[in-house]
Length: 450
Image 1 (cartoon, helix red, strand yellow):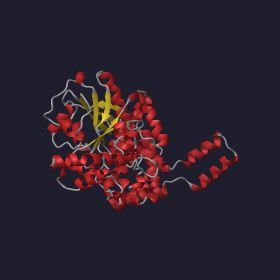
Image 2 (cartoon, rainbow, N blue to C red):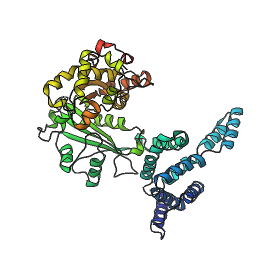
Image 3 (cartoon, one colour):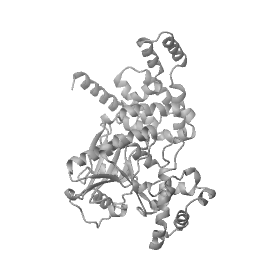
Image 4 (cartoon, rainbow, N blue to C red):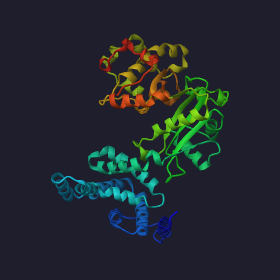
């Protein structure tokens, strides 16, 4: 470490300590004063004073109630944008005399002071995590008033794309020997299949045929950003119950031929829209391929979060145009206890799978992408829609969101990039024959039943 960086770290430590041990550490900062501190931080030059100011501001932000936080975001939007007059002059100068000098001036003036504010807030101890939480507080307000608060969101997303670049992220295995403080977070953050007890967590981490991996950021070393849980199996499982069954026989890793990514959880709402999940899955697949040579197939066991809502939204006229077995399936899944009857489960199977094929292959957003968010994620990563599973998840959540359906997305590693490009450029959905054969008439357009 150089003397300069060592001195910088020392000054930062002294500045932070002087703030946290100050006599006014419990004083609540009024919103106008907090806004003034933000202006001071942007214009300050001393590093130690900047650390103290940043810590001061973040402490003040934590104490704001929701109404005050919304007003603070409005202040950041209105008072920390670029100087419009200077920007206009710089744009005119570049238009009349294009070149490196005028372009550099234009770029410098176009950058909002908000970005510099957020960079300087990051000087405070724990600053990165605090700014992630700041964006988490912003998102509900943004949904109500994007026009006004959008510039703040744009700047945070812009910075996060750099701060959480794949090159900065560290992939670490999570196992039963991982520190308890991190394991507690895995229990808390699990977003797909809830972990109720430490014994349930042990069942997911300790057996020889189970793996878990997470991305960490160097500035937040003890708090995962995203993690994926993997089951090593002999074949593709048909249900999540078989994967999570504590009484299942444990498979020796060298006997496994399939790696099943059965849960992937983003840990921080403040990082919504900052994509690193695709990198995690691909890196885990490549690492598993090296460490468990017997593996041949890499698939997900994924929920279908929008299916039930999509089905409920079909118009009466659209339902009338459905196939007879599809109408029968809709009637059956409308009964609260249909999964208790094996006969009803089997009667619903053909129609429900046919409807699911319509949902995945024909139901589109205005941009031509599938309406299902999990499908967009995996297809965008270069996976193929491989198999739709009837009664794959008959938990209360699985029935409520998808009438029990689950789906496999296949990661065929040599073809991942090709499929990613096809989806990105043409919204092309890679699907197996097992899935396309479920589609009624093989060409039914979604508009015919909407």
